[in-house]
Length: 237
Image (cartoon, rainbow, N blue to C red; front, side):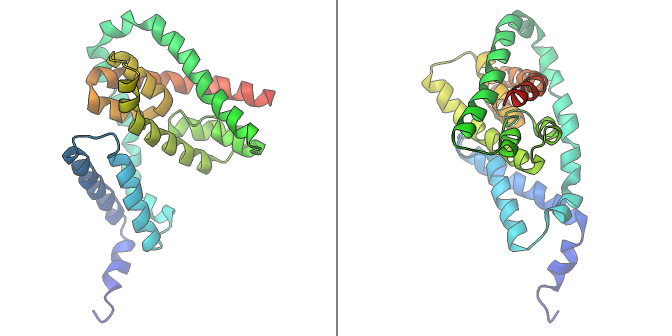
């Protein structure tokens, strides 16, 4: 053991290391969030991203190597999304009673999310490739990256924008809704799910199960709506 870094060189080539690291960082981040009383600014997703990212930079670990170990967490995104159906069934009567307001909010929210981003970026002189990458920022990463790639954007940039949008939405949703005096958890949840996809939905479930249920519905519906709206708007540019 003359070289104190020899053990790290060995561990860094072991895929289990990165899965263990990811889970450990998340547990610590979640405990920090819990200790803060789930304050909106103490977001465990943001904390985890910063810590894991810093570790990868300090250790000069390529993302591809990290993903080989952490891909099991990525795989669980599918089952986790499907599991949203459980509270959906539990609150189906409330969902059915709000179908018309949800439809109106979906159209308005999906259009505003795309048009506002494109308008601001275009006004600042962003090139076409950036506009395409930015347009689907409010839907879940898998759908957003597919839309971006198909229309000539940069999927990696889209992924960064999606995560940034989700974290910002999760941080500001509670104080914003309180400031607007919106107390209906169905409306609060649908709004954050529509604007901030999975990360916002996770935050909504922390606050209230009804909010999380409606956030999950909005996240799914917005994925469909955005996949139709973005190609039409990009074709008009």
